[in-house]
Length: 83
Image (tube, rainbow, N blue to C red; front, side, top):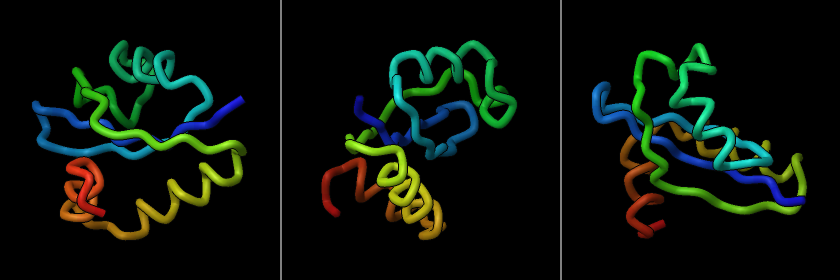
C-alpha cells in the first residue's frame, strides 16, 4: 500500500500543515472534523499538495525533509510545481 506526504492549507489561519498518511482522504476528513489537536484551530483545511511513496519510511523521511526547510516559500514552490 502507498503512503502520502501532504500539505494542507488553512485560509482562516493563513498557515500550512505538513504530514504523512496511508489513507489521504480519511486523514483529510479527520483534520477537518477536529480529530487532530494540532489542526483543529485551522478548520477547514484544503489539500494543496501530495506525493506518493511506496514505504512508510520513505514518506517519513520526506515529511521531515520538508519540515526541516522551515520555509513557507519552499512550500509555495512545491505547491506551484516549481521545485
